[in-house]
Length: 117
Image 1 (cartoon, rainbow, N blue to C red):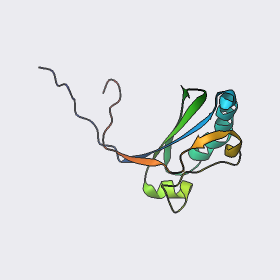
Image 2: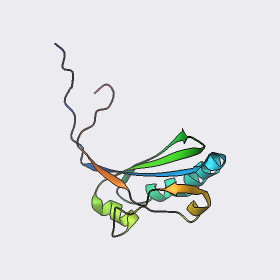
Image 3: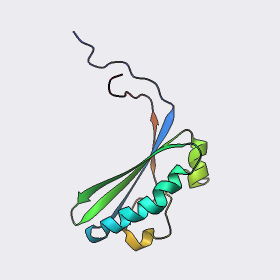
Image 4: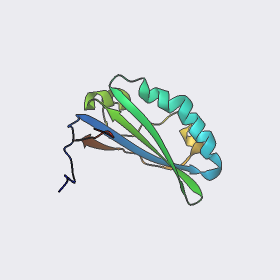
């Protein structure tokens, strides 16, 4: 019988997730703003390995989820400040966000598998 769950490679990184919602009419402008400001802001912090901006329709709004991958809690604190659970906001966020999470979630990555491995 084939191995249904092949072994995974242990990866010591932390994933940080945050969500916010904008009016559907503002979704493109907010996405553009995130591309201009947030994505480079995350990527410019030493210890940041990846930034993903996710987006999906949610009724008359659009939900945005920022998923970032970090080397360590110290790297996250270099980005977020002393309280790593506190969300980071950018200068024009108030212009777009109709709802937002004020805190973030962190997950330890304990395994990963790339296609073909």
